[in-house]
Image (tube, rainbow, N blue to C red; front, side):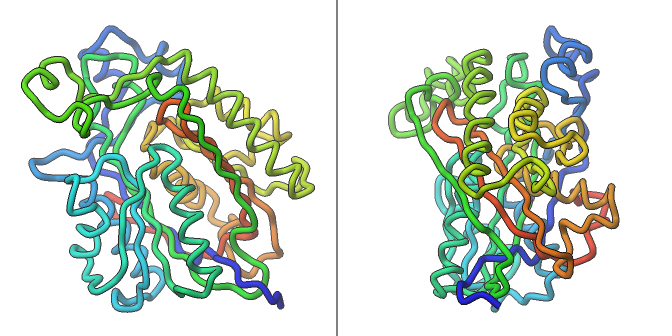
Amino acid sequence: MSNKTSAAITGVAGYVPDYVLTNEELEKLVDTNDEWITTRTGIKERRILKGEGQGTSVMGAKAVEELLRKTNVTPDQVDLLICATVTPDYLFPSASNMICKAVGIRETASFDLAAACSGFLNALAVGTAFIESGRYNKVIVVGADKMSAIVDYTDRTTCILFGDGAAAVMLEPNMEGLGVQDFILKSDGEGCESLMQKGGGSAYPPTHETVEQKLHYIRQEGQAVYKFAVTRMANVSAEIMERNHLVGDDIRFLVPHQANKRIIDATASRMGVSEDKVMLNIQKYGNTTAATMIVSVIARRRRYADCHFLRAETPPALSGVTRRCCCGRSFVGAAISRTVMCSETFPHAQNSA
């Protein structure tokens, strides 16, 4: 029994849309092919949310509904909901507000957190702080993005990368030393122009000109982003291992942000983690931005039914969690969690991740 309160993940859930956008279909839209995409990114397909008026909160609500069901938590028991996203339905009300409305959570604190691909890790850190402080007992952290809403499907440098999806976790207090052990967050805005959505904010509000210039779509300098990510993601992972006196054999699973398989491979190599310990689903879902980490955990759990990483009764095992941000060069981070605690079952509905 520990005297310190930890924030344990007691449930996970996810949702991806039905529509599958394959590399073969992208070949008809832009000058690319399956071999080129697979070799450079590892992606084979991604999910796309279709339908008029269907925004990020629709997917987030599906994930939260499943999370509440699996954890046997009622909406009135939730103390806080944080939604990490850069593609909210509207600038306001927030996606978190829309999710709460959809699932019946009332009179509860909620807010959005915008940090692109690092969004979930940042939201997890914030939620952890609320649990550790004793302020709240049940915190839901959602990572959800409808990237197809800001992708230019005539730009082969970006349209091959991104998919839509949502995931959610429940954080609750734990006095047995289980839960989030440590995290490192770093920010560097020097490379912001390497990956950004220029239009739509207060600097370049929507006009006919911004629409014609396609400023409302995501743009990136692929090589600059790759060079930054492949070094920084590996570096911060090595840093958190050193700070916690860990070696590769101590790591039960590496849960990386699913942006590019080559980046993931380089990170695992730097950490000394074997390929069988790496949670990887980029080939099926692409980069779902804030949702990638938990979606990959769910996919891994389905593949390995006896995966002890997700069971509370197992001996404490350390798992590295790393993130690389897709917002220029703005963010890298890492976290370590000691035996994620969650319910045994995972969603099996057709639309669930």
